[in-house]
Length: 120
Image 1 (tube, rainbow, N blue to C red):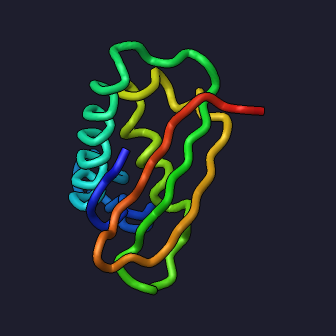
Image 2 (spheres, rainbow, N blue to C red):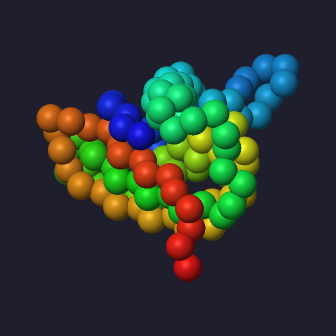
């Protein structure tokens, strides 16, 4: 799955809701990034076939950051796994191996996400 755009980390993902029903809510930036990931996953799912895998999975994500600003490599991972749930796999608890890498690519920010069977 190939996703273009600036990955949204966990620090930018949530905002405090004020007034009635206080608590945390997903920020507009996070909703936008999650939508991009979900749409890309839906496109990949159409090519792969209509069935979800039932076995344990491995997911590899390569972040492409737009600048050298220091970021956590694990920040956006939870949102990406949640966005692909119900699209590429039934539940993100199937992911038993997660590999995260990062590099700077100002010309092509985004993420490359690979989902496959877990190999021991």
